[in-house]
Image (cartoon, rainbow, N blue to C red; front, side, top):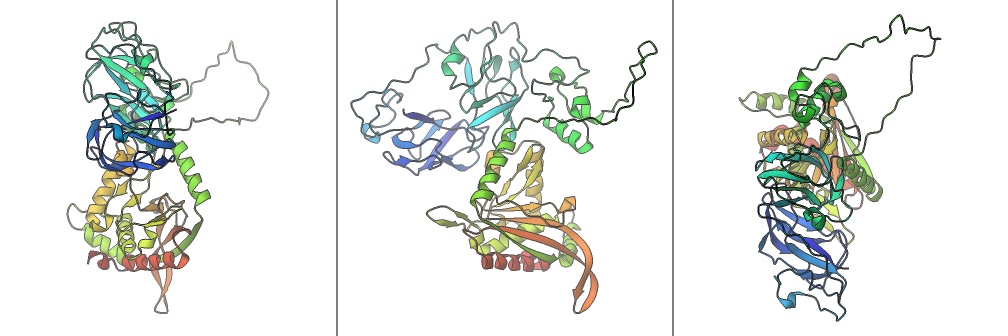
Length: 531
């Protein structure tokens, strides 16, 4: 049966998209994962891939045209299908449709309940270019509340991050379609907003797709229905899965301080834990419960007990597991390690940072050196496909950043054209966004090479799994003070080990070695990076 593909929401603020280029034409065979088109969003131009296989029967938005999110973009099915019932309004000329056989397929069920004036149906957004389902981590509003445009409705876990989802509409929250912890496909009904007291009976059922979880609508907007029962301020809000409700910043502070959020009292809305709750938290001393009347003499038993817990895998953790497994089992990895003298780099960094309002880290220097080395060794800046190896002549370095739920890789576009101070500022801004869950999908897209640094944790040497479709990733260790031999004399020096993981399908040993030699030259002579 034919599948309707709509204009995706490729960023959380996107309301319409423009088809920059169609990479397929009507009649072409489409495989799952094929790139259908390049779509311009409000953030960037992104490749849009197909999640379905079949024949491209119809194109609803021509190259160069713009359309709102959820507009009919294309139809994929089998040759000869009658798709006339799927084409709304006849937006495309008849010749754009593949030949139709006489057999008529069953029409798609249309909505039978009219949407009242002022009512907006909000669907699960596609917050990343590879997102197919989303999980509602936290609802920040409840049924019956007044919503202003720009209010944060919920935190949604995608395959790449947990992101705040804001409302583009004002009104009253009349309906919640996906409960906290619930997972549903993109375009499933997330919520309905409209004038208070509006009867929305039957609307959500007409728009619900598949078996997405659906909550019951409010009987009357004037009698607000809470998403969860009110809790005392003395205890944090916890859902059935055991998840404590807290703001992203509160979670980050708790993690840094080693505080168990389950012991923190939430003073925010509906008991939600906020920043001040964590900062003012003091662990309570254990209280003895026994009295003389109830005290009994017990035989001695070992003090320890067996204890374990299960933590539900987030969408990010599932995606990390899938992508890294695919990488390590499909790409033949090999590793090359060198030791770099960092004495001159340390002197140069001290000089640079003596300039007011300038802050450059050793990691920034490594990123710059990698970008310049990639320009000289473009085969390392490549990606594999079954038909061809793509050599990228633009350099976009991804920087691995650890976050609460796992790992994200924000990307510095055209890194080779950036100065050290520009790299330092960009990395800092992206890291802050990543840790506060403000990173946009476009800021994590398009890397051609990746740098992962664990030196700040005291790790001197390690290997990483390649972040596909990249062909290589550099693992950076700590700078270590140690005896070294220079000019036949043992002296104290500062060295750093770096390990290049290469995909042997695209990068040969000699190619990787030459890249590392160039990298070493830049790091050991930092002035060459300023030329």
